[in-house]
Each structure stands twice: as structure tokens, then as C-alpha cells.
Image (tube, rainbow, N blue to C red; front, side, top):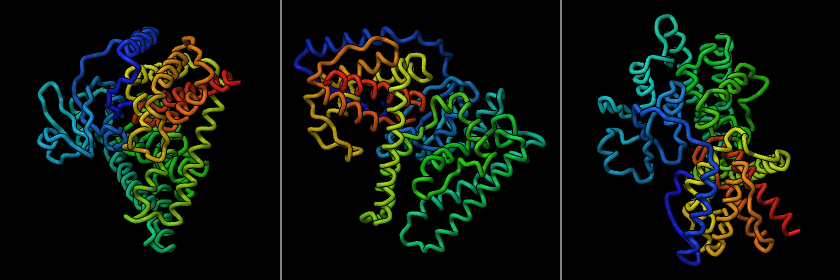
Length: 419
């Protein structure tokens, strides 16, 4: 889990820690050999939670072009002084090219620079296609602007019902314009058969609208009434670097909806009755989504070879100490998602063993049985972490799904042990 940087070691002594380290090393040995990587051509500076839509744009551009890069994560709540000194706006993303140390910020300026320096697989357009790209970008910008107003205005208690309906209507009109533009191009992308900057700049917010607007506004952008847009979403899910790395997933965006409602749905005061109703709706939907993943975990059998399983295992192996620390921080005040119940620190050894089993399941390695007396701890920890993991903050969407299924398989194994 990328943002969790605290490295805490718990145990009954140095020997216990060493044994745990050896056990994880044995699991890591089962990882497939890493692929050879090219030398990085640039460094991208981006948010440490991987939620910034503008950072997503640049990441998608980099993956679309097949460029090797390094990443530096910036804590947006406590930006380091060196970053504020380096980037005039102090915002993310920013990119520094290794060949000449040129620094560029603003997502569209970065995408244009990438095309200039690496013209293969262009994302911008020239000649006659330039006008088509400009028109698509204007439609997209209008949609994103009206979408922001609709999504947030719909929760604004100071707006009248008539004003909210006006925001809904404006969003629908702009959505229809984008739908018509994609259809006219022949699709599946904004300009036809090839991915362009228009798609890359549109998908980060549309992804959020896809999963969150049905909850917060009873509005669907992924619908049979919008066939070109629905086909566009499906096409984006096949873009390398998006579906497997950059995209969030239904479970994650649904789970954080209630968090966002608490943060931004109260206008600085206590949540209104309408907001509380939406929070309850979001939490119920999140439980439903996780329930479907749990059902899938029972049916799938082995997870080895599933798309994203190796990525999930690698991330867990790298960060298991931080994951255990977060899960067993029940003795202290949590820094985020305070509504989730952590386990006491004494549960750390059992949680660590459970997570080793999760990694084993992801890699097709036989998990070690956990004593029946620890079944309740295993189940509670598995459910907590399944709720806590977030794509793309912690891992890609496919990896997060595999990770959750492995957690639920451990929970099921613990229940069988207790029986």
C-alpha cells in the first residue's frame, strides 16, 4: 500500500521478527522473475494517494507511449519545500526529462511535450485532425465542467430544487454532445479507432462518475441509452496501463463515496438528513460490491494466473509490514477511515501469517493452516483489509480484485477451521 510508509515491527522478540522475515522471503521466492526494464527517460512527480485526475492523465500518456519513467510521490497535505521551490504552481503533476532536466507542469503541457520528444504513438493531432481533436476537447471540457457542478451542486443544501434540476439538465446536454461526437467519429474512442489526448483527459473523471453518480445523484453515464459512450468505456478498459494500473475499480470508488460525502457534503457543518441518507446508501452499495467479490472468491478456486494476481502479490510482499501495522493499530487513534475498526496490536502475528497466506494464494503456493483458535482474528482482519484496500491508490484494479478475493478465501478457510 503505497501511502503507508510506517515500518513497524511487532513480535515477541528479535527471533520472532527474524522468523517472520524468513517466512516472507520464502513467499517472495515464488514470485515470477521480473521483466527487464528500460532506462527511465523522465521522472513524474504525483500525488501519493494516486487520486489526482491530472496525474492520471499523464500516467496514461506515459503508458500509452510505452515510456519508462521514475515516480516521486508528493504528499499534497504536506508538500516538501524542495517541491514548492522547484514547481512554480506547487501543484502536481510535474515531469522532469532526464536528457536535459527540463521541468514541465500542467497535464496538457506535459502531454504535448511528450509528443514533441517522443513522436511515436502521438496523442495530439496535426493537420486536418487537429480541428477534430480541438472540437472533442471542447466538448469534453464542457462535460467535465458541468459534471463537477452537477456532482457537487446536487449535494448543496443551499441550492433550490429548480437550480439542481438545471445542473442535471446541463450535464445531460453535454453528455449527449460527447455521445454524438464519439458516434460521429465511428468510435470506439473520441476520434475514432485510435486513442488520443481527448480520451486520456476525459477518462479520469468519467471513471468516477461511472461508479459514484448512480449513488449520489441516481444518474448513470454507463447506460444503454448512451451506446457510443458505453462502447468508449469498454474500449478504455482494454488500454494498456489503464485497466491494469491507473484505473480505480467499482469497489474502491464506491467505498470512498461515503468518505467524500462526509468531507464535502456538509458545507462545513453537520451532514444534512439528505447527506446522511446518501452516506447510508453508499455504504450499503459498498457492502454489496464487496459481497459480490466474496462470492466470486468462492467460485474461482486458484487465483494464480488471474489477471493482476502477481501484481497484488508483489505489492503485498513489499508492504506487508505497513499493512499489518495499519490493520493492528486499534490501540491508537487512526489517521484515516476512522470508522473502520482496527484490531489490537496483539493480533499482529496472526494478521502477518494470514497475509502470507494471501500472498501464497495469489502465487499458487499452498497456504499454511492457521489454528482454529485464531479464526475470528483472521476473519476480522481479512474483512478490514478488503475494505481498506483502494485502487489505484494501493494497486491496479485487477490486482485489487484478486487481492480481495484472496483475503475472502482466507476468511472462508478460517471459518472452515472453526467448524
